[in-house]
Image (cartoon, rainbow, N blue to C red; front, side, top):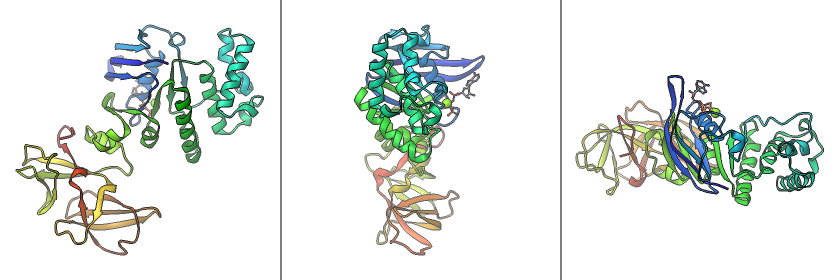
Length: 358
Ligand SMILES: Nc1ncnc2c1ncn2[C@@H]1O[C@H](COP(=O)(O)OP(=O)(O)OP(=O)(O)O)[C@@H](O)[C@H]1O
Ligand SMILES: [Mg+2]
């Protein structure tokens, strides 16, 4: 097990810089998820930690040792990829044993380690099978097993579940988390799926265009997103963004005409009277019939999903479609206008130009 430290790590391909100086300290035994949209640089960061890509600037340390110029095999890491790349002609046992044979472990030691990993991953009955005789989830576990037997200091995962169907993905996600709780090996996991990131990670690194926008626990990112990008990326359905003007005293936000939202006292910014972006999560609207301050939503359409209901509509003449998530279906049948309120502490305010949280 080991701490992994990135100090202002930069990657450029030729003249194009794709990672712009990422710094973070990953604690011994921590499960960190690197998350962000396609092309933002997640795999590049992981491959630099693995040593599969040279870094163009900065320092990477694993377990106190600078590894900038170490070969992947000398870094004491093990990596699981999206395509598990099992050897098709080898049995499950040999797939797991192969790396140990190369490293000249004794026969007894190899058998001991493979048996232990197989038991942990519930592959004990399958050791003599070939990969083609396994389900997707079982193959995934063999790929994990191949890493576990090496007893590395750090596990690196690059979208290891994305080839599995939705149901199996949820199941493997749980198994991965349980496995981590047993092994406690420092793990760095890449995904573009924010739900996977939220459920697996002790902490998340949200990357946008090669820079870390925010690093924090799942709840920190959900409750206090540092930027509009993080706010929109974390949470499903996505946060609603509405242009508004802060009142001079910072106590309310004017959406349009006299449609205004009360803001929380402690969160009231001391510089009012300017344009901002208001962010409200779909699950944070309440229907409040008797509230004279409620803001009316003109309903566009409704989706009844069973456990909850999505309502789409607009405030006054604002152009953006607002998404609202309600926990039950009985409040309304065919209303065209819903009176809504939002608790002031559930309203996020972002700088209109920079996207930074205010
Ligand atoms: N060998 C290369 N030469 C030039 N540019 C590259 C190279 N490899 C990656 N890039 C660029 O670096 C950026 C980051 O790529 P990376 O593969 O890290 O993205 P990612 O976040 O893993 O995306 P995805 O979710 O699609 O896997 C992209 O813009 C990509 O085009
Ligand atoms: Mg990638």
